[in-house]
Length: 499
Image 1 (tube, helix red, strand yellow):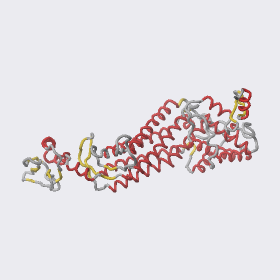
Image 2: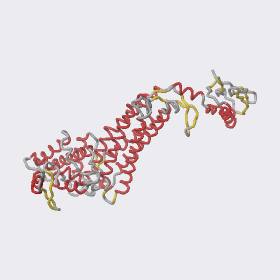
Image 3: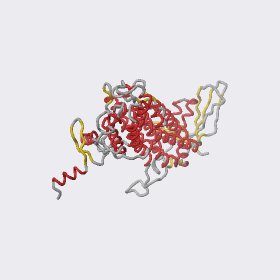
Image 4: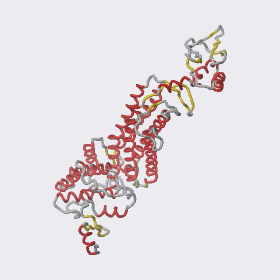
């Protein structure tokens, strides 16, 4: 059994002691983070979830850009700058030390703990490069050198924009384009398919299947346009504004140099904010991005719900579409196959809508005076929305949409027995008489029979009176007259049974 003395020796061996303005604290010996991060680990034991990898890489990119700006302006010694640069490159290029960011997502609303976490990791690694142990804060200091000319208040929102832009351009945009192309392919494939339209979930006039798909394609194309428009606002960042947007402690020209390096490092057209205080006190651009993602989710939800209705069955549903059978659907009903990709995408959409509600509330309630204090929360929700929505769309396209086929027999049978083709008679015999035909056909004929468009037949007299003949199967032919403007191009349709 380990006694208290032995336990104390183990703790001393596995930790190092660091000091700040609040006193001393033990920090794990092998950690690249320091006392500030350790206090955050102790004080924010809330979710057990850390800031996402995309954000950590974006934050490291901002640090690299700021370091190079300071080097250009001569505010940091080249020896220290080179050591910090090597440290940040190990994160960005080699993906090292990504396990050194333990701070919970529920932390201070400015994201200061995450900023200090990065400052300490880079400083400790830079000191190692220069031959000094971790935890000494010398010769590279996390605040004086790594955070030089910066504040958490301008660094974090800049990293938020970079992370969101990177995720949206690399994941969301390609997924949307993939969906749009798949829909275009299906529109061409089903160009000749005419089916029963449905409004209020009831039979309506016929509609091309390609037109229903065109609704989804057009919505997605508009969503893509809106998303790309949001990108134009996200490239504007408040770096150089420091604490409240005034640029206190940042040298002249720092913001311009920083965005110049950010543009080169990210291959994005990053621009400096004309009113940096706006990008610190509020996050309109992130709210706008979240709203765009919500709209994509709403469009996807309609598409997924429509397709699963059209594919319902196979014997007792609409049964118009045949979806790929990817896996068994039931643990108790043998042979059952469910519309799993539609359901998965629908769940993704519901979650994205929930994320947007969180972002909206965070922006409305977190933007207090000169600083929005919900930055980590907004970041996590936006990045997760992009992640799951882009993957959900990709999965739906590859495992469902690309493989959809039409059930031609069912579509033909339903179309031929639809009562709503009587709508075409309304201009010639009037709404009421056309309704009578539909009603009588529905009540008199208690069997499934095809009703087809017959040959057009127009009867006219010298008074420009048109007569329409129609047949209800099994009943005598009826004839009605209605005063209409004569037009030889008008087709009056006969309702006939059979050929």
